[in-house]
Image 1 (cartoon, rainbow, N blue to C red):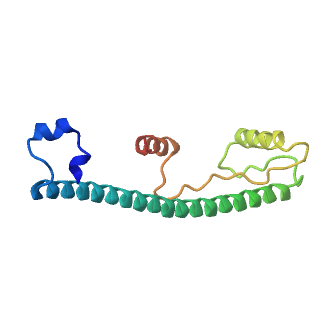
Image 2: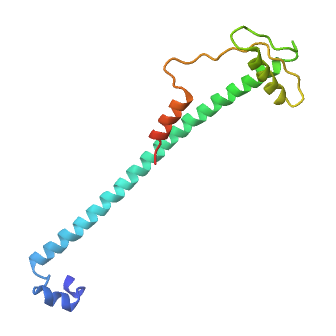
Image 3: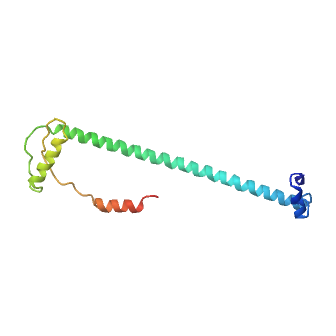
Amino acid sequence: MLTSLMPAAFTQAVGTELSDSKGMLMAVITCSGILIVFAILLLLIFIFYAYGGIFGAITSAKSKKLAAKKAAEAASKVKEEQTVTAASPEPVDDGTIPGEIIAVIAAAVAAMSDGKKYAVKKVSRAQRQTGSRNAWAAYGIYENTRPF
């Protein structure tokens, strides 16, 4: 049956025909092995595709939550900036930050205000979170651990 599919030169080179039981057994084992390998490869492709979809959905849900949180924080900051209206025209010094720095901050706020009048009521240093890195160290870690 399979010998009709083989070229005559091949059957002469082998010296035996595939019609005997050993030849048929070899052909069946070879074909079934190839089919099993491709079936497993297709199954692995499907599994990896499903994993990618699951983890992609999880990542996008986390990023949406983070974006919503950042948007809420930005909206609250804008609201706070709008409430800081022209209460006092001169910046108030709390003693820890030099007056020149406060003046520069007030000038930056005035430059970004688009004609609205804002006043800086209080300037204080941001509290550093425990265990956080400075910007240079964080960027170094980011640069050395980012994916290819």
